Length: 217
Figure 1 (tube, rainbow, N blue to C red):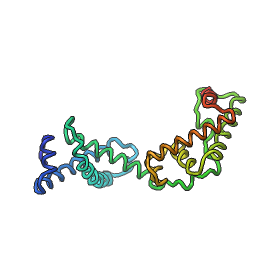
Figure 2 (cartoon, rainbow, N blue to C red):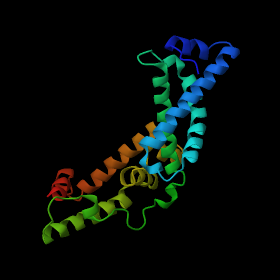
Figure 3 (cartoon, rainbow, N blue to C red):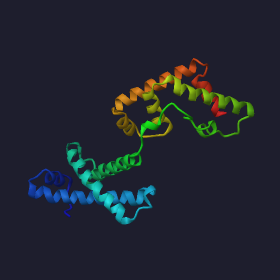
């Protein structure tokens, strides 16, 4: 590999085919090496994979990362080494790909307003001290009202979105994809769902301040 300056990287990657081809191969190799380091040293959830498996993942991701870097050459400002900048793009791509893989089988079909949708009050709102019997009963009653409000106040689409994002911690981009929408539309959907849920609960005398105080005690 050639040890290029920032200017040389940009010139070679945008040069004639006989100059660009070796530069692209050098870039791909460097990105593959950076991704492999990230997968093998920074991801404790991948320790069950062999070095060969991690190497194959890094190789596959490096191909896409090289294309991503090429698509973003105009945004490089020279504030760091070109290879450092490119590797950051590659690692972000790897993180995104791993996240998507985690939720590849996730479906909104199972998120319907049927059955139990919330864990127990103790699991949802951990406290420093054990509640009194009276307080525990009050919490359980409030949790039942919240669960009922989720079913009654929201549309099916709002329920699915809020349940996935707020209760199951599914990334926004995954939920948006499953709903066939975009992030901006999903933000509005979630905003409307939270507003309707809050209004429904307040109509029953359950203010946000009251619920927070109840579960913080």
